[in-house]
Amino acid sequence: MGQKVNPIGVRVGINRLWDSIWYADKDYANNLLEDLKIRQYLKKTGGKKDAAISRITIERFPERINVNIFTARPAIIIGRKGSEIDKLRGEIQKLTDNKKVQLKIVQIKRPETDAQLIAENIAEQIKKRIPYRRAMKQAISNALRSGALGIKVVCSGRLAGAEMARQESYKEGRIPLQTLRAKVLFGFATSETTLGAVGVKVWIYKGDSMDPFKTEA
Image (tube, rainbow, N blue to C red; front, side):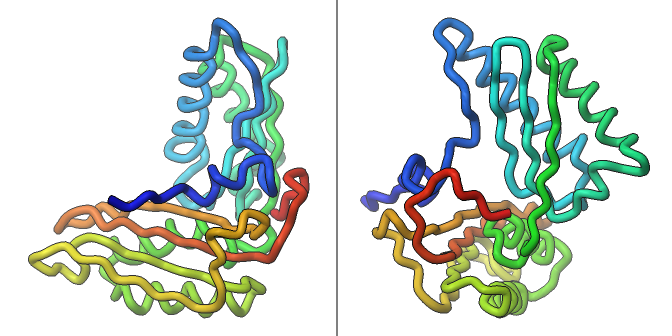
């Protein structure tokens, strides 16, 4: 059996912070459920499909919750004159029993080097029946052109409508997965096609770092 570790989880505290930053003694289960509801709402309902949300971090304080949304298209979330963000804040307050919510929108300057956005983009193209090889190779060339030092893309499932599910991968540059100081971003998305689900995984290497507080948007 393969002994595989998620590249994000193994680097937490070394060059990456937790996505949920809080401590709870008795309300752990309730807080965890609230976090899941917030993320699900922002990714599916509130964040809109074309908002390109990569990551959502949640910080909890006794009387306040800070929600940071990392997105490639902040204007879609903010809306005209901030109308959409006020609506989002109100909906999140309902999910958290009317606790005070502070929203912060962080723009991703280079979405071509964000693993989660690349995985979701490839999955969306596969759903639209664009050849998976073309989608994968295009994503790799765009990432390397935008400054990534290495990228690996894996697609699994009934590729091109094949009778038997299989896996295909492409790799360019370096992906030092066993080097903990290496800043490796990981993204996963599922493409729900008419012939079945196709999984997409993306690894991106963006250099070495030992500072977990240094965040690259």
